[in-house]
Each structure stands twice: as C-alpha cells, then as structure tokens.
Amino acid sequence: MKKIVVMSGKGGVGKSTVAANLAFSLSEEGNKVGVFDSDFHGPTIPKMLCVKGEKLTPNQDKIEPVSVNDNLTVLSMDFLLPNDDSAVIWRGPMKMKMINQMLEDVEWNGIDYMIIDLPPGTGDEPLSIAQQIPDMDGVVIVTTPQDVALQAVRKSINFAKKLNMKVLGVVENMDSLICPYCGEEIKLFGEGGGENMSQDLDVPYLGRIPIDPEIMKSGEEGISFMKIDSESTKVFKNIVDKIKENMGD
Image 1 (cartoon, rainbow, N blue to C red):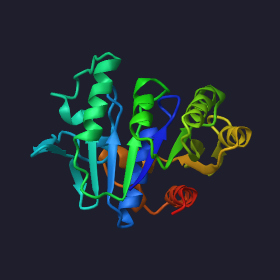
Image 2: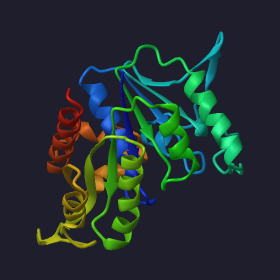
Image 3: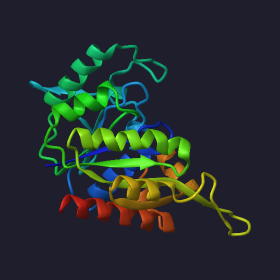
Image 4: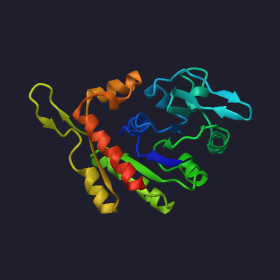
C-alpha cells in the first residue's frame, strides 16, 4: 500500500481539493484508494466526495470506512459528529488518542493507496500521523503563489524533511484566472512563487492549477473533477502522473 500525505502550512490554499481529486484520479485508474481526513476541526473531504451525512459502522473488532464507490473509501471525523454545526473542542491528548484509534481500528480492505489529508500547520495532528505511519511514501505540498502563503508552506517542507518524509513535490494552486470576457490571463496572487520556492528548497515542482469555476463546482457537488473535459483537468492529471513517477510507480 502506498501512503501519500497532502499538507500545507496554511489553510485556504485548496489542500483538501487536491487530496480529494488525487483520490478520485487514482481510483478511476482502477486502484483501490482510501482517504483519511485527519482535519478534526474543519473536515471537508466527505462533502467533496459526496458522502457527507454518512456514519461509520462497526464490523466485529474493526470499523468500516464509508464507501464512495467500488474503488474509493473514506474515514473522517465528520462521520462522528451529531450535526454540521458541531465543534470539536479537544485538547491535544484527546486528538492523539482518536488519531491512533482511527489508524489502528479501521478495516481498509486491501487498498492500493492511502491519501492522508492533514490539517493546516505543523502541530499535533501532523506530527502524530508522521510518527504513527513511519513508512510514508511521500508528501505533496499545496500552496498558492503569494508570499503570505509561501512563508507558512516553507515550514511544512522543512517539517517533512526533519521527519525524513520524502517530499514528492509542490502543487501551486489558484495560479491564475482566465477572464471569461476577454480571455486575458490574470495573476490574482502573483506569479511563480511556488516554483521559485521549490527550487530554493530543492524539492520537485509538480505544476500550476488555475482558478477554475468547474473545480469549485465539482467540490460543492461532490463529483470528480477528473471527469470534466478542460485544460485544468489535463493539468491535474499531469500532476498525478508526476506524483506517481516521484514515488517510483
């Protein structure tokens, strides 16, 4: 089983969107994929995979993750909350206990890939997961081009390096917007920051994902963006191929 962590030092950069569509893409190639949404305070993966509102079910001594389709399953704190507005107000030790239980007591049924969507930052949850899964195959780092995001994301790359986690590469999300009226490319958040950071920190650069209303729509509706025929889809598929190549697949 290949284990891929998706992380960022900052929220709001599209990390969960990348994780969800990476899972969709790998599963649509015929792989068995499991997604572990480890963001306890803002779990969004179930919404993006169209399984929000589902509940976990016990199976003898193990917990069955929620099935999205024949090739894709997901585990999330969202499945344990009583309603959408419930807040998880836990200190670190309680979160660590829950992470350990989720990793040890879930029956993933022979998956080929596990995608782990980490919460933003380099705190308790990322550290606990890195220590609990020492045989990680690599980390995908998600950023946006502007300096405010890059300052935080650089910390995530150094976090991964210090824990001997292989950095598979950097995805630069929300790179540009194509004006629907004149066709001009607009760099809303600057240009080239993610690529320059990759060179500076000596990690692979995976590519740029533009701002595309279809990406937002697919996430809201819980459908695979990979099934949409667009230039953005081609970009993302190329990123997935680079991730697999950097893992040695």
